[in-house]
Structures are given as structure tokens and as C-alpha cells.
Length: 321
Length: 226
Image (cartoon, rainbow over all chains, first blue to last red; front, side):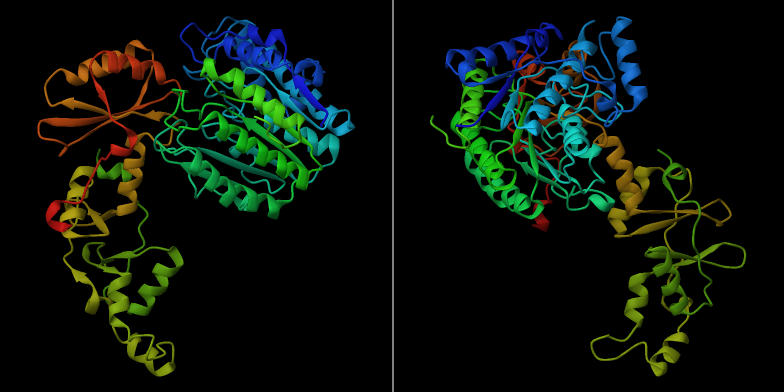
């Protein structure tokens, strides 16, 4: 059994979008309920979020962007940078708190208090670029965590594995030229899905060539294709890169019941994916792994998906469901 | 839509009396495949392509064309001997559509752009045309593509655009594909949002058919060329 940290704060519910927006506080509530009802809370190490130090945000985002976001938020702007990014007066603070929580989890992993962690945060992060908000995201939580592991933990090679059904354009672009952070993403093919990036020929830039890998999946595909691509692309890439830490951008929106995409994964396939990612951590990082929530909008499925996800983390890669 | 906006206006040219080896070096250095051939007055008298040069050279399988003897022979071949004389040219106020149709019907790689007196003003190549189309497709910006199958009748586009606009979504582009079923059109709105599930439901409720992504197409080979 692993020591698994769990980050969830009621404050994360305070970031409001709008009644018809898919990225709603309800998502986090059903995730938490799924974990709670399964009786997993006593096994988990609670992680307390704190407001992130600006120093860490600025390892990834331009200072101007952070100021612009804060100013917009407090001056009552409710749509920031693009119509997808709806916010309320609390959004900036909640986004700071989400980053802080993720960094706290990272810190606990570094200090050995926990082996791995699941961070149920809002707003999500993988679409957020260095200097603009996009696709419901404001701060790139996983990118900041990667820098934290490098600076605070002295790690030379950090891998980010992103199985949200949308390509994490922000994360990819932030580390495009960086051979010390490997970005892998599996997602619906960009000609058929937001954000229109993540084609298989996008493999990094300059010194970073070979440290970005994308597996675009055609609409209508499901479990078999995901299993095939992850075995073909992800596992050999990790063998070669040998990460010292694995960060996971966890999105549940490739589920067949999620109408944000045309990918049809079963609940069991999500367990298969996480079991294999956890096995990669066992092999390369001594079991250390940080999972951070991105998308996932099928409220009726998020509870079971989160329960299975956390169970696999607790069991160090063995799926009991 | 005018060519002058999309063409390269700093053009590398060559003299008709130059040797083809000089032309080859110029192309290699600038990584280009077409050189307009101009007279002393900068009037276009021809165009030479990397293929024209390759065709003039002996096959590298049998002979070493870099040997002294071969080089001397090749050095004597002039640009004017292998170029296409009086090539099809366009005017800066021709449009992108003109250039596309010319490139398609004459199987060209590039068109010299000349003014009323026949003097060279620029060159427009297939890649410039492609860049223009990447731009109008809007795929440089993040968004989501939908495909709606509609009856080919007046007012349909208005209903689609209205439904999407009411959701507060902006458009990256809208493409309409022809040659679908008889009397049908495929409309491809490229929406600058991640948030399409609601608008998809709304369009379905309005009676529109949203096509399965695997059945989308914007082009197919004409039947007689298959």
C-alpha cells in the first residue's frame, strides 16, 4: 500500500463560470463524493492548500499576464482572454490556491511524506499558455509543478503524461524547447477537436526536439486504440527518457458518456491507463507520481472514475476494480 | 485577395545567358525551385525550374556530372536553352483564386508576377497559396470544427449562424463543401471555443444533421481520375 495524498478544498468550488458552462463546481463535488462514499478518505493523507508564492507562478507565466489576470478579476471582468474563460471575482485567488495545493503535494512527495497524490483542483491548467488563458484554464498547474520539482527537488528529468481528451497546448508550448521536461499527450485528433494542436509531427523545437510526443486518436475510437497507442508511444518514450518524476494531467473527458469529445473509453480503460502509468512510476521514479485534475464533464461518471484513480494510486498500480 | 499581398517581392532572378550550373547554385543557396528569367530591363522572358536543370543533366547513376569533362559540357548549357519561354504570368491585382485555378489547370509550381510593362514585381508559389488557405481555414487559432449536413436552400446558413451566435461563440471560419449528396451541402463551422456540446445539442434540436466526424470530407478525387 502506498502513502497517497489527496488534495480537495471546498474553496475550489468558489470559482464560478456560468450555469451552462461545462466546467462547473459540481464536477469537483461528485469527484469528492465518489472518493468519500468508497470509504477511501481514511486511507488518504489530506493535503492542505495554501496560496502559491508568486515566485513559482513566474517560473512558467509572464508577470504581465499574472497582473493582467488579477486586474481583470478584481475589476469585475467576467470573460478573460477568450469566451471559454468565464470567471467570477474569486477566480484569481482560487487559481492561486489550486497552484499552491499542487505545490504542497509536490513538496510532500519530495520530502517523502507521501509517495503519490491526486489533486482534485479547479480551475484546470493544461491549456494555459505562458501569457494567456485558454480553454477554461488560467495557471498551468502541472507546468509549475514540473519547475518546482526541478528547482526545489533538483530533478533533471520530469515527465508530464496528459490523457485529457484535449491536447495540452499550454504545457507543450511551455516546454517546447526544453529537453529536461518530456511532454506526452494522447487526445482526440486536432482536426476534430479543440484546441487544434497536438499533431503527431509536433515533436518539440530546437533542443527540445524528441522531448514532446503526441498520439492523436481519431473520433469514434475507444479502449483498443488507447491501449495500442500508449504501449506503442508512451512506454518506449519513458524507457528512453527515464524520468525522475512523473506528473499526470488527469482528464476524464475521453469517457464514452462525456459529450465533450467523440472518443469512447470505458471506465475500465481509465483504470487500465492509470495502472500502466503507475507501473511506469514504479519502474522509473521509485513510485513517485503527482496526478492533477484537468477536464472531465460527465457528472454521472466522475465519481467512479475518481474512486478508481485513487484506488490505483493507493495500491501502487494494482487495479482491484 | 490580391496576389500582391501574398507574393514574395524580393525575387532571385537569372539572366537568360547564364549557365544552368549558376542557376542551380542560386536555387540551392536560397532553397527555392523556380527562378524567373529576366532581361536587362527586368522583363520576364522565361522561368527555369530545378526540374528543367535536372532534365538537362546526365543521369547520376551512370556518370559523375561533377567531373571536369562533364562540368565543362554542362557549363556550356545556358538558361535560355532549357527554360520555359514566355511563361504564364500574373498581375499584382490578379487574385488568389486566379492563381489557384492557373496552378491547377496548368500544373504549375510558381507564377512570376509582372506589371503592365512586363517587368517583374514578385513571384507567387504553391506554398504561398497554401499559407493563404491555412489562414482562411483559421486552423492557426484554437477551436473546434463541426460538420452539418444541410439542404441546399437559401436561409439555411442564416439559421446556423444565428444559432451559434446566440451561444456567444465566434467563428474562425465557415467552409461549405460541394459535391456531397444531390441537393445537399456540408457546412463546416470552425468555432473558436472548446465548449461545443451545448451548441451541438441546440443545432440537433433545430433539426440539423450533425455528421459523424468519420464521414466528414471536404474533397474527393473526381471519379474519372480514380
